[in-house]
Image (cartoon, rainbow, N blue to C red; front, side, top):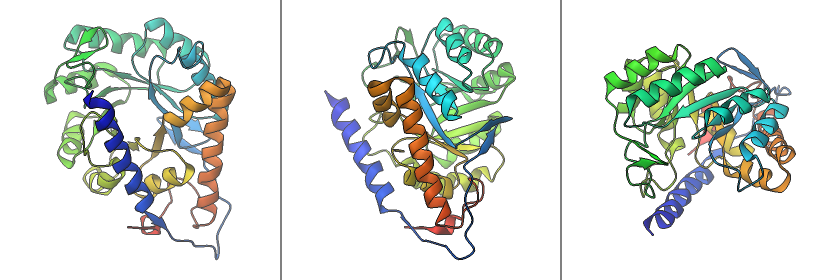
Length: 295
């Protein structure tokens, strides 16, 4: 019974911090903004991505595939979590640009097997949930049917080497782990936490500026947790994120209209983002001045 309370507190803390950040306007000499961006060689219409989701069949029939179709139609990147090899191939078959996140399974051979399959299937990049090494509160040491366990820096280096495509560490929430991600040769990091995995976790967007200083533009930084609107995406991008992930809003769109609902959510958030960029003199996602944000 702890998880719902912890999740609620974590989400509230994150939402309150997002709302505490204010944005100044710069409209003289402003230009019409473009939300187009590029990630790992893929041209995208938006820096708003579908965060790593799993098991959406109860939300909508063939929910993961429908989500991928919606992301592809919106020109957005999709991340996926737990799922079968057949599902991963079906997701990529929709034309969606996809990043596969692998749980930190205790069975290292299983990790290498999943890396090999995802690479062969044609993922844009791979990654691992670094904050799921003891499982979620529900799983208590298990990620679905397979046990999980902590990973050493040497373990992560071996995964990076085996991937041969960018290997992204998801769940980075400290300067210390950001430094280790660089040492491991990670191709990017996601500043995030599983909502509810720990009560009172620091909001990702709050610690983001510190992590940005550590990374110093050497690898891309992504952010998720609490990204619900275009203005949230703008704030995270201004503070140093390359792109942002959204989950709950996507799931609501999926439940309502399937792929079309996912597309609508992503495009609506992107238009909200573009509007704020227009009014702040921000020409594109890579050129948003952090001094636009007032704390």
